Image 1 (cartoon, rainbow, N blue to C red):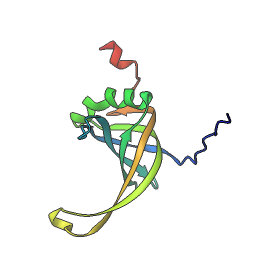
Image 2: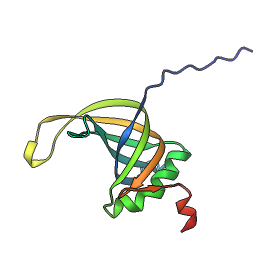
Image 3: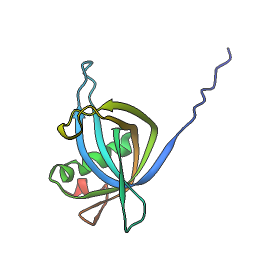
Length: 133
C-alpha cells in the first residue's frame, strides 16, 4: 500500500510587539484554548505604528511563554515579545463601538507558534523564571 505524503504551504510572520489580552477561551465543545492580542510594531523607531493580530496560541513553547507572561499582562505591565506567527488570515467585521459604529474593519487572525524572547517593563525574562518562583 502506497502512503500519500502530505504537503503544506506555510505562511510565517515574525516581528516584535506588545502582548495584550491573554484569554482562556472555552468553546461549546468544551475544548479550551488560549488566545492573545499582539500589537506588532512597524515603521521607523521615531514614528512607530502598530498592527494588531488576534492569535490562538499553538504549541508547547508558545504556551509556556504566554502562561509565564499572563500575570504581567493582567497587571498592565509592558510585555514586549519577539514573536512567530503562522497562517495569517484577514476577516472583515462591522464595528459596534459608538465612535465608529457600522464601519467595516479588518481583523488579522493567526496562530502564535513561538516566542523568541520577552521583556517586561524593559527587563529581559527567561522561561526558567516560572520555575524559580
